[in-house]
Image (cartoon, rainbow, N blue to C red; front, side, top):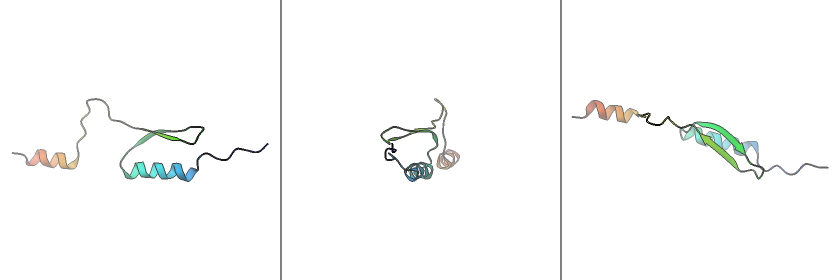
Length: 64
């Protein structure tokens, strides 16, 4: 009995993870379905937690 063909390739998953990292997105978990669909679960900030960027800090320091 032979194996069924692979539904996804490791390089596909690697490319998806590299793309998420390049976009500044942190991946918490990856799930691959039987049909080869990859589901990336992202890390989110806690509710009510303010996220600031350097631009936000500069605007706050130079406002008014």
